[in-house]
Length: 294
Length: 320
Image (cartoon, rainbow over all chains, first blue to last red; front, side, top):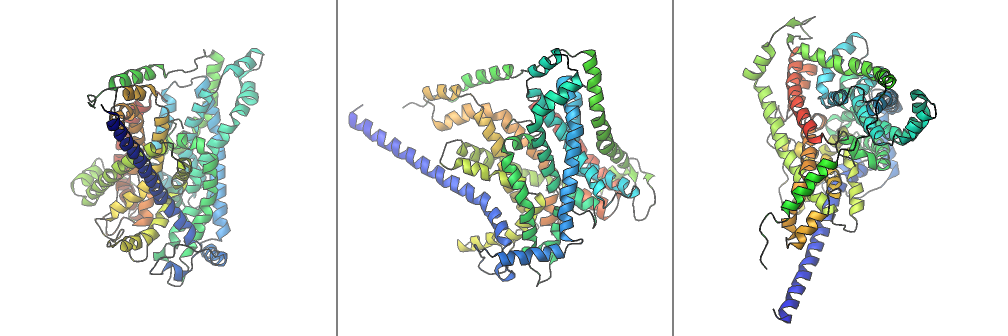
């Protein structure tokens, strides 16, 4: 093999390497555009007037706070109940249901992890309750709630979201408790503390970050939930996702601002996106039922 | 240079994989005293009571209802129907059969799309390119947004005459299709929206999988002269297979019950062309108030989910 031959091979390889790198960057930019553009469009829509919304050449950049507040005000005033009440419903229902899940779920999760209560099968049975399609629980809920006058109440939706989130919360907290080191607890036990004291003063404080993260995941799930909300509420207990269909273009009169739905959507997205960034580490675990440790 | 025979390095990979699997069990096994056992059951009780009331009882109630006729509009109470609901579903109800086909079609389009894109993007983000961390963070956003909002957003993006997607197509000279109002395209559009929202989930799962792979088999194959494609095909892919299967299964379960996006994007239309099993079940149960019939549909769906759950248990056993 001559030297010249070798150096030619070397430059082609180098060239191909550079070409490969360059095409990877092109792909990366494409990925970023495809996943970012719809989000940008959501943001943009909240700031558009109807003329901009219906322009034949779509408007790709605008920012006008005045238009935003017009859009938002229209939406808030044209909800079945006062707009702030819808946001309040979302907050109360998601908040109360996740707190219930965390309090009751953490006790069970601790027992599953430390005392192996119910072996391996009971925890998995609980998880499998979560996997069932919402329709399966939704129909019976609807029938029973009609008799109990729980349709269109905050309590009714709270029960539905406890049902939705409890299995996941128990499951995730079990895996967090199991991963934590039992040595500190054993030391406390040897020092004469009983199990309840150990849990109260050692385990739960140490698990606080996991409890908060799991609670926030449950909160996000309930805040975003749509199916139970349209099923079990009519007017008074509506949450943000279930009022949104009222503001799709086909529901609006021609002179009503199309941006109104965008403004409500944007306002409800901002808190969950902030939560998502804060919870990055736990997110994959939560969404995959702990089957994949993120 | 002579290319190495296919499978070079594959042997090493299998051995490492087997060793990994064997050592993955590191449970903290402390002996549990009788007091601990009693306390355990007391701690579990509140959760079991709540789960029984809000999960188990509704599911049992729904299962029983599947064998009854209960038309809320015309009948004050349910009458026993035996297997009639199921016979009707599978023999005369063409809308149900169509919904089944549409559900399979949705999975058939969305699942491979999300799987291939997810794997491709995960591999891309694993190359250590400048900016890939930022893109990874950006990818978190779609799946944290309410699917109601995603549906709302895409009904605007897909608008035939005013939407930006068709505008961009017209700029490059392509005709913009009727994404949502064409019977054959509606289900494809729903699959695309699902792919936008949930491909990032697979990217994150696959990326976590890629990063937890041992580096030795790849290096060994490299030393043996395997090129990048051969290393991917015969080393990375087999090692990643369990993670791939788990991720795709989780997506399959979710796509199977897709409802929100359909409700907002097409409402099952045009006509009944984009109705899936979930949507048809909702329609019979809550719009036509045939509670027994709707329960029969959800009963059938549950049977599919039991199958999914069994597979999930097998795949994720080591992690559980």
